[in-house]
Length: 281
Image 1 (cartoon, one colour):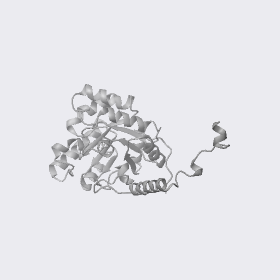
Image 2 (cartoon, rainbow, N blue to C red; image 1 turned 90 degrees about the horizontal axis):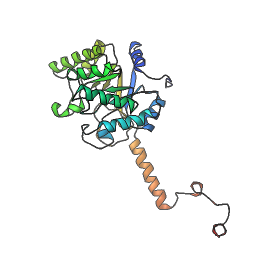
Image 3 (cartoon, helix red, strand yellow; image 1 turned 180 degrees about the vertical axis):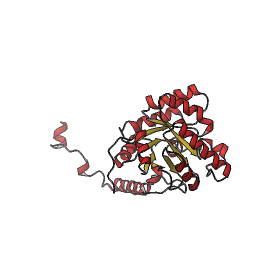
Image 4 (cartoon, rainbow, N blue to C red; image 1 turned 45 degrees about the vertical axis):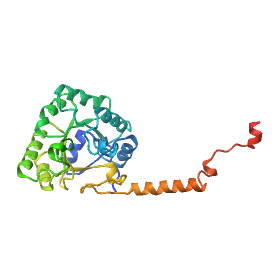
């Protein structure tokens, strides 16, 4: 097993990874302890995703997540002084109305949340917003393919790019986003052949989630990859642990120990150095 690199991850670091033909690792996480664990393990990028609406809040999609919630969770993650690069996911309605409001919201992610970059979903419809954010010196992570904030238009969480015209549009948008200056691209739920073509066509890193092995890196939700949830797992998730099962067993043992009187024991209790009756007189 490789030892974690102790170098702070930045946009230049991620660019270097692609240039050297290496792979980068990313997760979506939402709090201090998770960020600390991920950083110590050597994760390159932590996305504070609007997926928190589904993973943390139990919603059916990401659309109800607010900017205040993203800023709050970003602050928890950045407080860990992680070596990983921290990116705020700009939620639905935070960059859809005006350039002025978009800039105000992106600045909040950095100034209040401590993010080192922001992520926006979409291609050509968002070019003006992305360019404006880049012009105020905030790095942008692009996101193409399945864009969860567009599920009502897309008809649900469906694989994108299976049709020729859609695949061509995604490729063209990827090339244009690189020209605009985004530092990397998330490619979600697209055929691996299209992801390979995009990865070969741009010099910036591509980060896949349901986009196959040819991307420059991969991202998964922390709770999914460690098996912390018993909810539905998409096809592209590989579960590396079963923390849900481990925690269930721990809790059952805890309940048992309380009910049988074996917890707490003497070692888990505090003691006086004299008899209690003498002590309280």
